[in-house]
Length: 152
Ligand SMILES: Cc1cc2nc3c(=O)[nH]c(=O)nc-3n(C[C@H](O)[C@H](O)[C@H](O)COP(=O)(O)O)c2cc1C
Image 1 (tube, protein in one colour):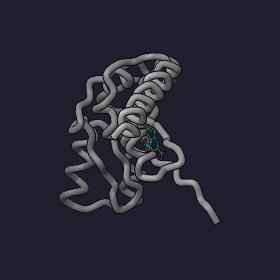
Image 2 (tube, helix red, strand yellow):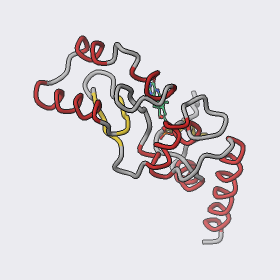
Image 3 (cartoon, helix red, strand yellow):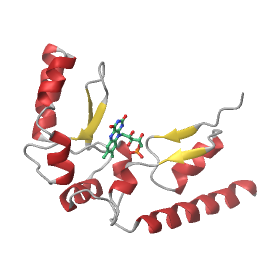
């Protein structure tokens, strides 16, 4: 049986897409890049934070339960500190995230109480543009790389 592999995580431009195809992927799944587009339902604050992020702007928490990557913030620092010092249980994770953290951060732009989920690929996002423009740029970069590589 042939199972197509879709590469996901860290792909935000045509270079990442070309790398994934070179490794044998049949397609790519793109998350964070589309969260920072005009059509995205995220709050303007959240989109702006994705643009501001560099490659070290995020933190991975709840590794042994349901790994979650989000922008470093006072709330995420609190979660990380607790996890490092005491470890983390599913019950405690549910408690910490019970107050609609994602909604507050992503849809309401609440920096203090919310949580801004984004991948390390946020470091590659430089502007908020229409989703169609993201696709157009990705394809242009991808084709450019493909043409270059086939000449080697
Ligand atoms: C707003 C947002 C919500 C997400 N929610 C989930 C989720 O519920 N479960 C999950 O496994 N991953 C979630 N992710 C992580 C995506 O799986 C991840 O972004 C995807 O692998 C693509 O990687 P990329 O963001 O670097 O393109 C979320 C990412 C974003 C940006």
